[in-house]
Image (cartoon, rainbow, N blue to C red; front, side, top):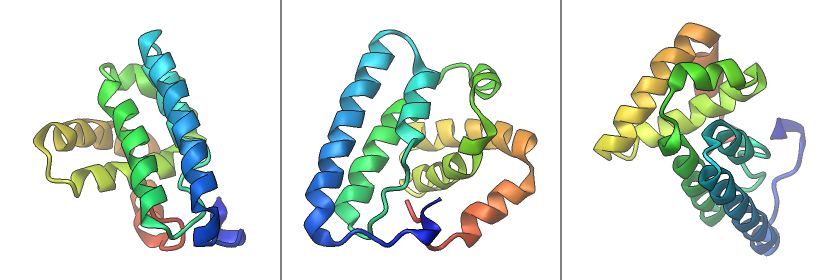
Length: 135
């Protein structure tokens, strides 16, 4: 996790945005190949960006959101998703719920239910208590 790392200054935000754009292209390619779980893993890797710059966080959310919305088989997703992604996924689910967008909220709630069953309540607590690595 990024807790021990320094936050990136605004000067480096453009470099982060460039990495996120590269990640976005890779995710689109995976989605075209009908590999939504691989796309989600790619979206979650290196997330959240180690910066307080909201442009970076928003750009990364767009990438994660695209991958989340492509998931059709939630059970199948969890059989292929490593537990190391659970806490960061939970953070992004809460970000999705905060949008108020009906399709996004519906998808986030479906995934949240299964994630809580699989990872337990500790996953929720860790996501909410971690105020350093915000998404």
